[in-house]
Length: 434
Figure (spheres, helix red, strand yellow):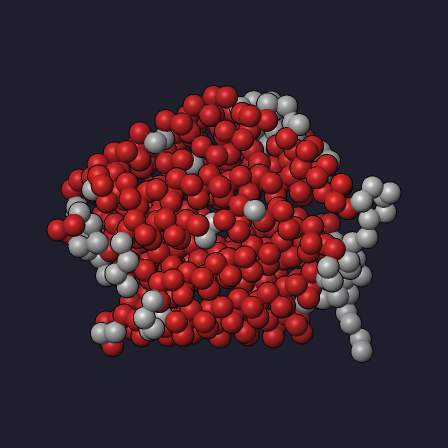
């Protein structure tokens, strides 16, 4: 049987990264909207869905297993089928008594599968492409990951909302929505079985050193925590998004809650448009603008502007919670402003993780950074629902503004290399003259 080592990257990269982004947004965002529509309290939603971050927190711990056991191609196909089965299980358990515990258990399994799929997909990307192709397609993979977010938070939420309206049965509407997702992932698994290439380098990793793999594994972790100024690094990774980690968990409940409870009283479909479509587009644009400006002056120059532009737009939710406007366009503008600022400011955070990971074990150290990043989102998010129900939305969003202070403090503690992220002068001259 002829197994092609290479295929046209357009045949598999867009679908692979769409499949990578979709379960992440379903587990961490769509589930929040679903549980809100099914009558779960904000306290329980924030607490239990924040626990779903945990697989991404500890993802670095089992990353080496993906290298040591079989091929990344096989991991991708199997995990996509497992994710499809998990989504089908959610669809089947929504209508039953005790659905909250049952669906959470399945989403927990899916979160582990999704986090492991991330490891395999990112590794396969580097194996399936030549070096110049990796650089050429990095924008493509990011774009289709964002399209997956729009599909999950936008299109699928609108579908669920439309079904709610026409059938009058919220559980049935969400069961059908998750059934559609399950079918999509079965298709992904089958498609990638036939369309992913078979790179010769995609094989089980064998250690060529006398030191045992377990010893090597722990040495990689020890090397990360021996980095200079490691306490400042960890504090920055944990607290830079302290405010956003609380705000983001309550956006959907706030938009959905009736006005007499302090929310904006939007329908499910309207939330799919405001937060899942307009918001994600603004978030993506913010990231693109951030990626455009940093190479011109470097991260050190742009760090503080990005911190300010990320945190100050949180005032949009202070306004929304105080004024409770009914103008749909105004609500869209306010949410888009906050999301654009978040996308713009997050660029500095992402680039800082790359800077911290430079040197030996770059891939493993970046994975550790992403694990700490996920922990920084998980812990504050767990308490945010109870805090909101205690304070009410207006005071909660004032608290969010106070929560931006740690982000400014930890930014002052870190050290940025002078030219990190800055395009070499020769490249700038070529751009300006070309």
